[in-house]
Amino acid sequence: MSMPDVTYERFAPSPKLALYVEHFWLVSAPGEKTPRREILIPNGRPMLLLSFANPSVRIDPLSGNRLPNSNILSGIATQPFVIEQFGESRYIGVQFKPYGLISFLRGEKLINQALSVNEWLGESGVEALNNSLLAHDFGRARIEMLDTYLHSIAVEVDEQDLHLLDSIIDRIEQTHGQMKVEELAKQAHMHYTTYYRMFKNYVGIGPKLFSDIVRYYTFVEDLLSDRPNSSEMLIVTLESYYDQAHAAKEFRRFTGVTPTSFRTTLNNIAKLMHQD
Image (cartoon, rainbow, N blue to C red; front, top):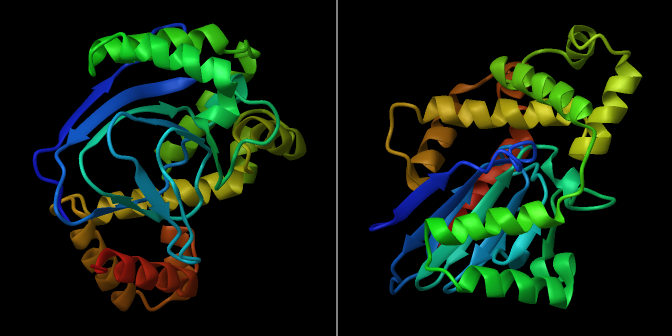
């Protein structure tokens, strides 16, 4: 289902946040009589999502579980999910670097999970954030206030480790997730065990799973590179590729998932997308 009259803007973080944040974005769209459903393909990034209109719901295509998708801090997802939106939408989002939560969250990195903003910041933190954001119009000024707030609560992390991780992640993405993790460790001049532990500690998942996510995301991008970017086209294109792909080994290499897992997820997503 397409989303007409959508306004989308992207903003770079301030230099002080650029170690942890890739970009801010805002999106707004008018309400419609029927719910909008969109497919989100994992991109290996944690996200902060703040809603200033009707909240949306995140649906797991495998379990059917419906969870809030507004005013949450979410970690890296390892499988696609469907977003359902009723009515008007106005969001501000923060796309962190893969390891970006290390500066804002102790302990686990919320892999396939989300914290409400209240759970994350506490009542006083949420009140301070809301007061600073709502004092400004929806747009650049509100983004700048969010940037300032995040900087005020960020915990400093060893920059040398972050720069090393940046170079490793860049290499994974440059090779579309196809390089063996042992070779990545070798290029970083690290013993594999040390490399794995550092990656897992900062990102929350191991380098192999992260490479699988990058491979799947790149695979979908390539399939849609010359086609309209819509959820309907995504389903049609993925189904077409699946029907043509006969070798399970090749399918796994290009998507990061097995054919059986891919088909199960795709079938459930298609059902969700066509519900009334």
